[in-house]
Amino acid sequence: MVTTWICVTCGTQYPESVAAPERCPICDDERQYLGWEGQRWTTPAELFLSHWNEVRPEEPGLFGIGTTPAFAIGQRALLVQSPGGNLLFDCVSLLDRATVAWVKALGGLRAIAVSHPHYYSAMADWARALGVPIYLHEAERRWVMRPDPAIEFWSGETLALWDDLTLVRLGGHFAGGQVLHWPAGAEGRGALLTGDVIQVVQDRRWVSFMYSYPNLIPLPAAVVRRIADTVAGYRFDRIYGAWWGKVVRGDARAAVIRSARRYVASLERTDV
Image (spheres, rainbow, N blue to C red):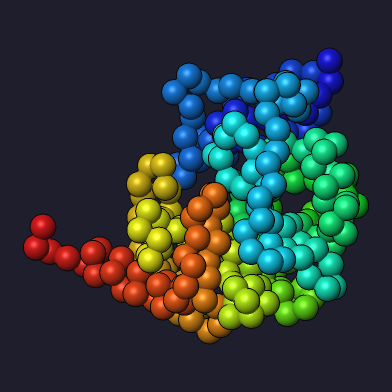
């Protein structure tokens, strides 16, 4: 049977074929990993039988969409409501009729943007079902496992969307890693949607930065300084990370700056 195949470890969807691919290049990369049980695949039909999507309000104008039980990396997407059109930031592997109906009832989407390749998941299915483009940074072209005409690659450091929404390339975790600046978020104080390009950690007063999270490979000090310097140019009081509850509720801009200083100081320590 011809179907699309989904990597069980990272949730990335591959083009239609009779047989599953031999390997997932995203999991073979040193930033990810091959599951301990080896390369495993599932299909959308199999995923529908055991999983469903849950929608939760995060704040006025922002909803999280996450798959239950958690699948693959377990991130949740974020839907930003805006007068000029709704934006989906990041994506999940499951798209069912109930989710499509809910998004359409909310006014549909104007576009999708995904922070980095680990969350590309089933973005092509989402774009096709909702009739919208996908904005990715051109530095990540090689990591698109399921090419689609809906994908629009952009270049440079920022991409202005609408209603002052802006995609900002930070790099770090991936060269084209992008975050979304949402000026209307946090009751008008501004919010940054970061995936794990900037990672909200267990002590949610802080954030962190890594080349690989599962394999604990740090970023160089110069890269962390550049990320902090870039986001310091934006006004935001809140950060939404990749998972439920991973939110810096207040003073988020200062949290990034002090976290970057702590990170760099730790890299440079010689007394341990």
